[in-house]
Image (cartoon, rainbow, N blue to C red; front, side, top):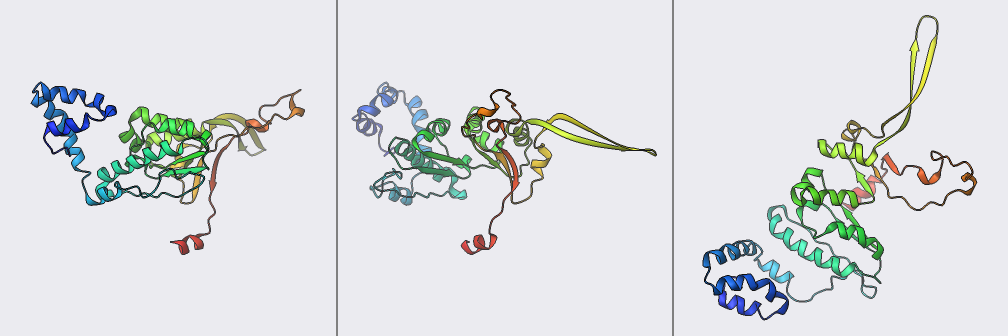
Length: 280
């Protein structure tokens, strides 16, 4: 379509009221014979759009085979899409188109609970993903995002986009990391510091003395995160509302109160590896 003469392209697109206002600058450049300006604007679009041209893309995006509202109470369904490392730029754009349209369909009231799980997040673009994370919970939509390191996410979403994602998510699960920025974020922002008790022992010819002291120190140091073995997880779970124990109201101890206990963890998983191998 974009390969047709400009007069045909503009005449067709200007018939749609929603598109007409967006196309006005292009049509104005064409009518004023600003061909160099027009080629600069449209040329980039033609090059990028040409990458999407394939029989497979035409087959998938034509027809009305199924509804993207997978959380419909009457017709619930699953949708699985995949990427190809060799065609990441092309397929990633098409996948993003499907996902962004799917979000507008499921992020509404009256649906059954639905989970959106995205692995290798930097390989596709989510439009205003921070708003999805912040508002979808009220519509019973759970969002799970997976990526390797923070610089990888920053390269595709930018510094601001990366910060919006990592600060909006309520639950954080992580394995071993190697990047300095990722380790510092985990050590300082996710786990932080906590009051810890340390004991030192000194021995001389006459006696053995023990000293016990309390100090604020990192709950999980960066070195410990970097050295995590396979099967170990660390992170933080979102807090649920916990009612205050009325018996503690007269003498409230913040360190003993249930509602102030940490939800951070550093643990080893326990999976039935035989069942996993059988499933593979």
